[in-house]
Image 1 (cartoon, rainbow, N blue to C red):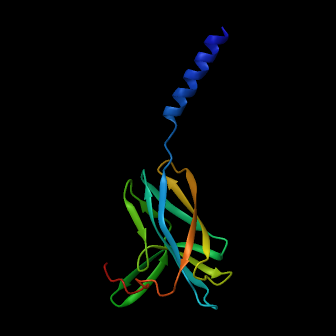
Image 2: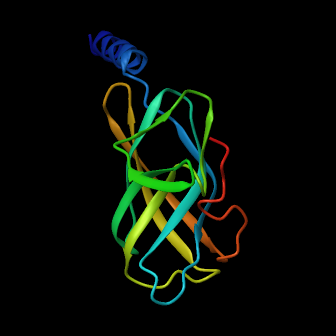
Length: 157
């Protein structure tokens, strides 16, 4: 009887594994943060995010900033507009680029200067279609202020 109970239990566990909803597998490549000058209170974090399944980037956090938001930057005629967004779609299998002049993570109310060579921890919160959330811990190196593609100069919209 013990063997029958074990076989039944094993069968139930194997079945459960196959019916559990799949969580979004998300990868982050080439993360970086733009350096700041001493009194600057905000900067951006940039990266490539790819999700194996449809998902949304719904939140970001970092201990270096009092406020962290997912932002969209766009040009309307010759006026730069920046605004927080509630989420950023991550279509299955497609790389979404967070870059200067587009979507990015805005780090505001900085607690310290971002210096070239430092590493900034950023936590991304991703929500799958099943509304379950997962976090991705990112270590983003700080790049110089003069890194190409300065915000506001990309008019490919």
